[in-house]
Image (cartoon, rainbow, N blue to C red; front, side, top):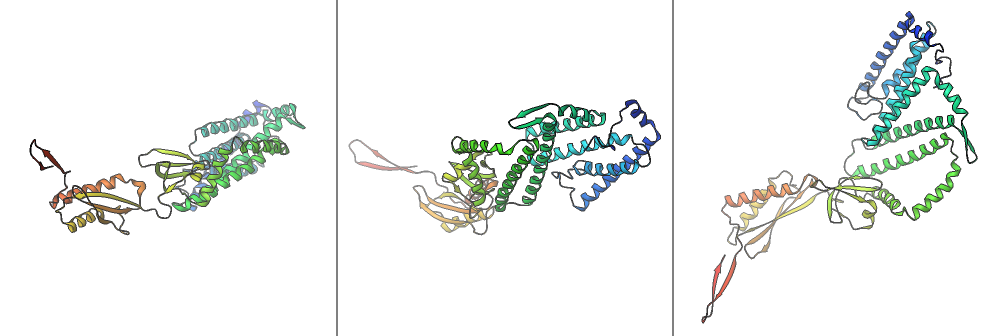
Length: 437
């Protein structure tokens, strides 16, 4: 935007400018502005239906409702410029001198806020950035409309200082910050769109690889955006070579652990030795991988506890991946019955108890084995496979054990108590054996 242009030049005489709102031409401008708003709503609603974006709350352009996304204020701004260009040939403009800056501020605020929400979700510091963008945009609009913006920029041009061999002015710094913010927002918008496209409707094993591509793409785009932003501020990038050497030495000495975690994160995502959704055991902590970040991996166990594991530990230490080649998990339970029990009947009852549970896989099916001749009875081991260990294992084992107990009692099969033999020695007699339980 160029506040010094003739079409957007504010009215110098405030009283004359305010009186222009009372002229009949202002009604025509208001009617045109209302028509532009209705047309923008219709266009955005049509695009939402055509592109099936009604259920896309995270979309930067469309949002949750017609006026929620960034597309509505952008379309409204474009149509406002068109209407202003048509009306300025027939009536003197007053309303559009205010409407256009307001629409520009609204489009900037909505675009910045939606991009931050899509890029960083519910991070607490996003709210601070949103308020900062809103205040800066509305302040710029007020200065633009009041005519103070060109005056302030001209005064800021006279405030200069030297940074090394470069001479900077306050105006250059302000314009550079605005340009850098715009570049970073556009960079975040592109990276968020790429991430949403890569991770859309992806579950299971393919998600980890696409997450790696998404993280690498975002890091690359942010690096390029940062370089462009620094150039826009006026910083000589050749001076960063010394800083880059210092950072390299710091990484080689004090930051080697941090750098190792980042490198290990990309290695894990690229090799796919561990993926989101895998069940792993690391340092006696067993759980399901819920997220793999650049620096750490998040593991959640069945009790709800979460462990943040540095990626270097997953590379250098021994890790048990319980679902690397096969997501199925084997479980077992041991049942002891009396020695006089019908072995075939017991085996059938155990199989029926496991097969009746819908979470137990039919292929491979459950199996029963006479595993041991115990001191108190025959010990049977019932083994079965499940394909959803993340939904809990204790509840399933409990349900199977309760079904086994009910079946054994219904068929009169004894579950023996521990039995012991006691030898009693009497004075003057030999040893007499007495059995007890």
